[in-house]
Image 1 (tube, rainbow, N blue to C red):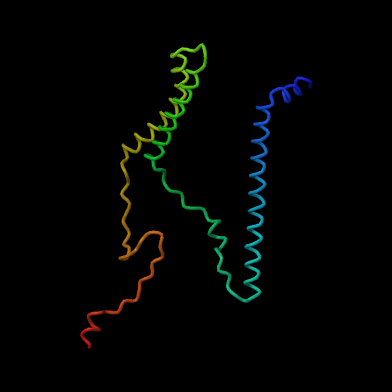
Image 2 (image 1 turned 60 degrees about the vertical axis):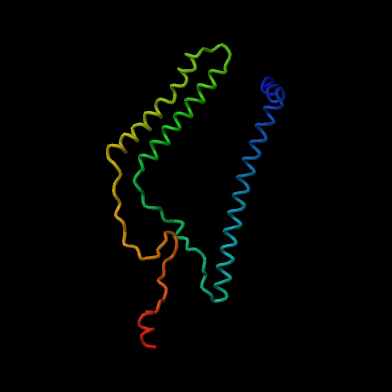
Length: 168
């Protein structure tokens, strides 16, 4: 028990950093819980106020948040690049860490950098699969003229200008 107390009080900077990081994490968690609770209460108050006034509540329906998106097929090119670049980052970090340690050789650092071989193999497998299967051609839907993705499309009323000119 006395060794534990010496460890706690002996190295003040390491303990201070650990305590500060713990308090920051707890503070962020508490803030998010309180914020979400306040937001839920505000939405409830808005809904009740609109019901009392006899108005239709124009808030977002809860079903929108509850629905899960349809599962899309994995984009193997993107997955492969993520795995491959992650492997390069991991291997370079381990190589640099081991190379900076006193009393190590280049062979030790290269051996440590082999930790990136498994993620690199997974990334290469994704890239090879993407190359072998090719990209699937998605059908292009018939969209109205003036349609832009993300915007609600409502055709504007346009009178026939040619026929109105002929009548005058």
